[in-house]
Image (cartoon, rainbow, N blue to C red; front, side, top):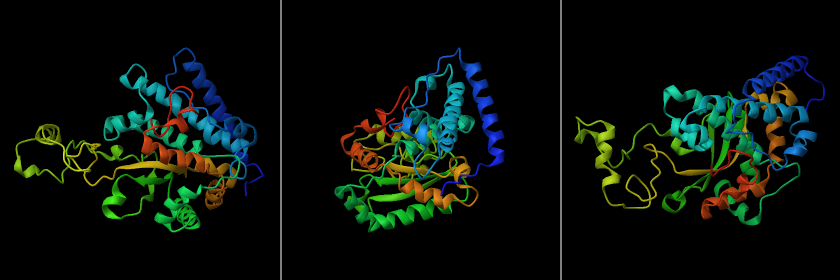
Length: 318
């Protein structure tokens, strides 16, 4: 249950956070903010009452209003005057995922994106998956209770902050008979998107052999690859649907995520309260958003999260 007795140190923390927030606002008040904190569908209700059974109003303020605002302010500083100033957060994180000198930019863009995915799928009311979507869950996890127990156990077992995601593997089930849905963990501000794991290899190493060209670097070798040949197959480096995955990478889409960072749950649940927070989170999942995210992959429309956004969107299609 949510702790009702306040933690003394939190008063100082909130005072420092408020002072920092004011300092940031003053410093950047004269600058144009390209990236802004998105509006949540239930944002007003969450600000007034918290997320019922999961986060208090103060807990929501820390985890979303203050933290998301801080991350977005940092993102504006890092992108000011650059090409990324007008870029979507998903494009920024994919662009800089493997550039060591852009680690801070990647971290802030990815964290803004991930945190929005997490909060966008919350509802103040109870929600249940539809019968058609339950068939997908049953096929991959045998039942909804099995998915719940696996998801909560996985998130609770993470030793450190990060996110746990429910993903859909694109085109894989028909080819390998593997489950369509799966659980994926990412640590710190890591991104679940396959493009964020691309290590600057512009070719599929399963279809190329660098030993054939011992004096060529990878960029030169790419000229001999898919870009100069005809397309073939549904997947891989020569397919028309190739998304420049890293070797061994899985083409996937994200349906749902939960944040395990301590600042989200520690204020309301206390030390040792992580599992309780996760169980409460499960009861506040907006399954209509999850199902819409899955449907959007089929019709290439990203309307569920776009309609929630003000300014730059951090939704699934962004």
